[in-house]
Length: 233
Image (cartoon, rainbow, N blue to C red):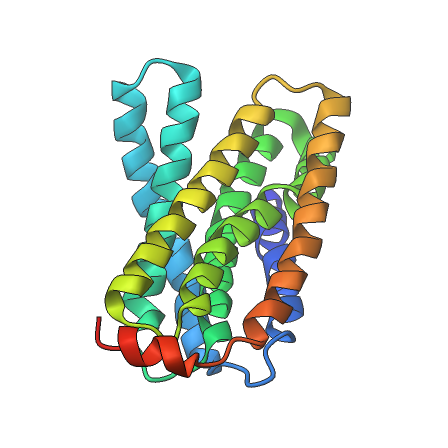
């Protein structure tokens, strides 16, 4: 019973968020491709776990460890997006990269949440598991969504430019995503209940910003004068 609850609590919130975000795309992506991205995000949890265990045995400083873990998770999520979706013909408009990045992030969050809730159920029982499930719905699930969407936005914003410009944009976006993720990790490290509520309030504010980014990415069009110069870079 605990296992069923953990799986449902881990999967259902990310799926609800996925339904919400896909409605931002006027030309929905193929369901099988989104499913592949979701599974890719789930597999990225395994790769991240291996990397985090290795880093955890090397880095002793707790703060540095949390920063390194944030970097590992963001990098593996992007690797999954790049391997599955970004080079496919279906990636044919600026908003698509954001959708793929968010889908991978939600797949990642689904498995991470399931494992976390299982641990909470084993140590604290059902009541603690219920509380953990609710907190994961608000906190880390949205964090993964927001951080990955930064990378997707960076790629989509320069969609009509060449490879070097896209590489630069993704590098900047990935750096920003790692920074946001690391700041969240460090902020909750020793935070009390009031500080935690403030942090979650900032996450909801970031969701509002994310909705604004969707509107911005929808407005991206080829810039002929600049594009003609940079399209072959």
